[in-house]
Image 1 (cartoon, rainbow, N blue to C red):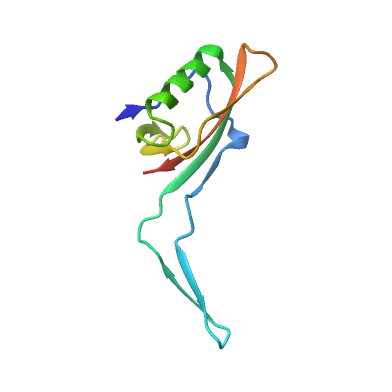
Image 2: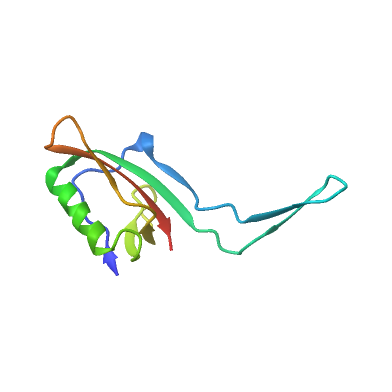
Length: 116
């Protein structure tokens, strides 16, 4: 299993999102107006969205190579949550989005990770 690359920047605090990957609730409405609920599954994985605002060109290449190595969302990898310090097995939920940050020397990157 691969490890997430070490980058020279940390994710932006104001763009950090952490939530459950999906709602496991099955809802059934009855004719009397009541709603019955039950869980679809017992385990609910977590999902993290993060943005990096000021990555170097070398960090961008490192992330692109990593994304190619894990085949976007095909392979799981070890990632340490910078907020809690806990390690999770995750995969990319979608391709990483890159955009220049003022010039082509600095880059913004946006990604969503989903717990395996």
